[in-house]
Length: 141
Image (cartoon, rainbow, N blue to C red):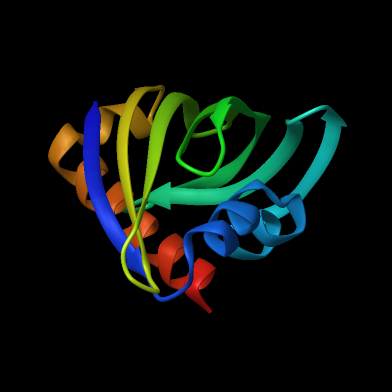
Protein backbone atom coordinates (compact mmCIF):
# COMPACT_ATOMS: atom_id res chain seq x y z
CA UNK A 1 0.00 0.00 0.00
CA UNK A 2 1.30 3.43 -0.91
CA UNK A 3 0.22 6.59 0.82
CA UNK A 4 1.36 10.16 0.47
CA UNK A 5 0.26 13.46 1.84
CA UNK A 6 1.28 16.69 3.43
CA UNK A 7 0.57 18.78 6.49
CA UNK A 8 1.46 22.27 7.60
CA UNK A 9 2.61 22.85 11.17
CA UNK A 10 2.53 26.39 12.59
CA UNK A 11 6.11 26.28 13.86
CA UNK A 12 9.54 27.10 12.41
CA UNK A 13 11.41 24.43 10.44
CA UNK A 14 14.16 23.85 13.05
CA UNK A 15 11.60 23.38 15.83
CA UNK A 16 9.57 20.88 13.79
CA UNK A 17 12.74 18.96 12.88
CA UNK A 18 13.75 18.77 16.55
CA UNK A 19 10.27 17.58 17.55
CA UNK A 20 10.24 14.83 14.92
CA UNK A 21 13.63 13.58 16.10
CA UNK A 22 12.75 13.63 19.84
CA UNK A 23 11.54 10.25 21.17
CA UNK A 24 9.63 11.91 24.02
CA UNK A 25 7.66 14.01 21.53
CA UNK A 26 7.07 11.02 19.26
CA UNK A 27 5.78 8.93 22.18
CA UNK A 28 3.22 11.66 22.99
CA UNK A 29 2.13 12.29 19.40
CA UNK A 30 1.95 8.86 17.72
CA UNK A 31 -1.70 7.78 17.96
CA UNK A 32 -2.06 4.69 20.14
CA UNK A 33 1.59 4.71 21.30
CA UNK A 34 1.90 2.91 24.63
CA UNK A 35 5.69 2.95 24.82
CA UNK A 36 8.73 4.05 22.87
CA UNK A 37 12.06 2.90 24.27
CA UNK A 38 15.44 3.71 22.77
CA UNK A 39 17.43 0.56 21.92
CA UNK A 40 20.29 2.24 20.06
CA UNK A 41 21.11 5.42 18.17
CA UNK A 42 17.89 6.49 16.37
CA UNK A 43 16.38 3.01 16.95
CA UNK A 44 13.42 2.32 19.21
CA UNK A 45 11.20 -0.50 20.45
CA UNK A 46 7.59 0.59 20.22
CA UNK A 47 4.24 -0.72 21.42
CA UNK A 48 1.16 0.69 19.70
CA UNK A 49 -2.53 -0.09 19.95
CA UNK A 50 -4.25 0.31 16.59
CA UNK A 51 -6.82 -1.21 14.35
CA UNK A 52 -9.08 -1.06 11.36
CA UNK A 53 -12.84 -1.49 11.69
CA UNK A 54 -13.47 -4.25 14.26
CA UNK A 55 -9.92 -5.61 14.03
CA UNK A 56 -8.10 -3.98 16.96
CA UNK A 57 -4.93 -5.01 18.70
CA UNK A 58 -1.52 -4.23 20.08
CA UNK A 59 1.56 -4.23 17.90
CA UNK A 60 5.11 -4.55 19.15
CA UNK A 61 7.95 -3.63 16.87
CA UNK A 62 10.91 -1.55 15.92
CA UNK A 63 11.17 2.01 14.63
CA UNK A 64 14.28 3.49 13.05
CA UNK A 65 14.96 7.09 12.02
CA UNK A 66 17.42 6.87 9.13
CA UNK A 67 19.07 8.87 6.36
CA UNK A 68 18.89 12.21 8.19
CA UNK A 69 19.46 15.40 6.19
CA UNK A 70 18.88 18.02 8.91
CA UNK A 71 16.57 19.87 8.87
CA UNK A 72 15.17 18.86 5.50
CA UNK A 73 14.45 15.11 5.38
CA UNK A 74 14.69 11.69 6.97
CA UNK A 75 13.32 8.19 6.54
CA UNK A 76 11.26 6.41 9.18
CA UNK A 77 11.23 2.62 9.02
CA UNK A 78 8.75 0.71 11.16
CA UNK A 79 8.09 -2.98 11.51
CA UNK A 80 5.69 -4.55 13.95
CA UNK A 81 3.45 -7.48 14.61
CA UNK A 82 0.55 -8.36 16.83
CA UNK A 83 -2.48 -10.61 16.94
CA UNK A 84 -4.27 -8.70 14.12
CA UNK A 85 -1.33 -8.99 11.72
CA UNK A 86 1.92 -7.42 10.64
CA UNK A 87 3.02 -4.02 9.37
CA UNK A 88 6.26 -3.15 7.57
CA UNK A 89 6.51 0.50 6.49
CA UNK A 90 9.02 2.94 5.08
CA UNK A 91 8.08 6.62 5.25
CA UNK A 92 10.11 9.34 3.50
CA UNK A 93 9.60 12.69 5.23
CA UNK A 94 10.52 16.08 3.72
CA UNK A 95 10.28 19.41 5.53
CA UNK A 96 10.07 22.80 3.81
CA UNK A 97 10.28 26.24 5.43
CA UNK A 98 7.06 28.17 4.97
CA UNK A 99 7.49 31.69 6.44
CA UNK A 100 7.03 30.81 10.11
CA UNK A 101 5.38 27.48 9.43
CA UNK A 102 6.70 24.16 8.14
CA UNK A 103 5.27 22.04 5.37
CA UNK A 104 5.75 18.30 5.89
CA UNK A 105 5.42 16.02 2.87
CA UNK A 106 5.47 12.26 3.31
CA UNK A 107 5.50 9.22 1.04
CA UNK A 108 4.86 5.88 2.67
CA UNK A 109 5.15 2.38 1.34
CA UNK A 110 3.64 -0.22 3.66
CA UNK A 111 3.03 -3.94 3.55
CA UNK A 112 0.20 -5.07 5.83
CA UNK A 113 -0.43 -8.76 6.51
CA UNK A 114 -2.68 -10.99 8.54
CA UNK A 115 -6.32 -10.25 9.40
CA UNK A 116 -5.82 -6.50 9.23
CA UNK A 117 -4.36 -6.83 5.73
CA UNK A 118 -7.55 -8.50 4.58
CA UNK A 119 -9.84 -5.52 5.18
CA UNK A 120 -9.00 -3.89 1.85
CA UNK A 121 -6.68 -1.17 0.65
CA UNK A 122 -9.35 1.54 0.55
CA UNK A 123 -10.21 1.12 4.24
CA UNK A 124 -6.55 0.81 5.24
CA UNK A 125 -5.73 3.99 3.29
CA UNK A 126 -8.55 5.89 4.97
CA UNK A 127 -7.41 4.84 8.44
CA UNK A 128 -3.77 5.64 7.60
CA UNK A 129 -4.68 9.16 6.39
CA UNK A 130 -6.76 9.81 9.52
CA UNK A 131 -3.93 8.57 11.75
CA UNK A 132 -1.42 10.79 9.92
CA UNK A 133 -3.73 13.78 10.44
CA UNK A 134 -3.99 13.03 14.17
CA UNK A 135 -0.21 12.70 14.40
CA UNK A 136 0.55 16.04 12.70
CA UNK A 137 -2.13 17.84 14.74
CA UNK A 138 -0.51 16.45 17.90
CA UNK A 139 2.97 17.54 16.72
CA UNK A 140 1.66 21.07 16.18
CA UNK A 141 0.19 21.15 19.71
